Length: 265
Image (tube, rainbow, N blue to C red; front, side, top):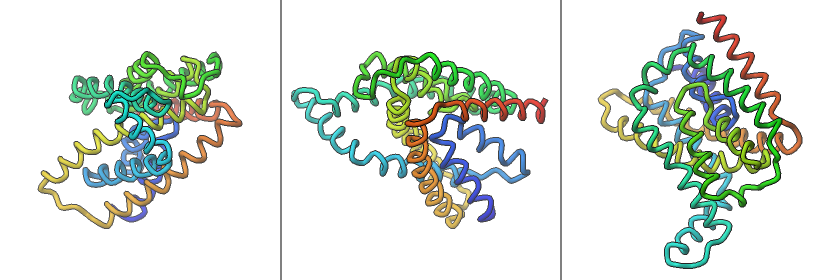
């Protein structure tokens, strides 16, 4: 893989991981559209590590008190807003873990077709626009209870289908539950930490067991670039939704979905 291909794939992973437009769809489609070779297991691990590093760095001031207060609740101390948020992330991750185990074969095979991606891109794009229009947007992330976390986590399972968008479907669920755009996005990004860490760790184990050589230049370049782009994406997206709605992302998804139908039908 050339440095040019590495740059663009890292750019796509970094930006689309946290935008509500589906990173998996873009990473599957780019090699097909441009005739590039498959990026390989090592590159997948690299961009996962980069994206994870970006979100950990951005939320570092929240994560430390979340871990501290969560540990104190295990020792019987009263709950705080940070410990409640930590429990919400844990509860919200459970459905994805179960769904990933049950649907692994289906997701890695039949559901990776361009037509499935086109359909989910359009359908869940419309769902995002609908939720943004009807949501009350009166609650922040500290109002999330265990039922809210479980419902958002259940919605996250749908992101196993390429084209759905993990951030898109969790933001959609959060908006339907009355969260503000910023609260829905922040909780979605916090949920992304275990959502990236768990499959990324499995890919790492596969990489260690694989006999294929690792192209370390592409690995480290992809990791660093995806981290930079992902961090920029988080900052820009959270700033955007404080002033604007989700229309631009809905329109993009509809245009992309129609384009895929035209190309692959």
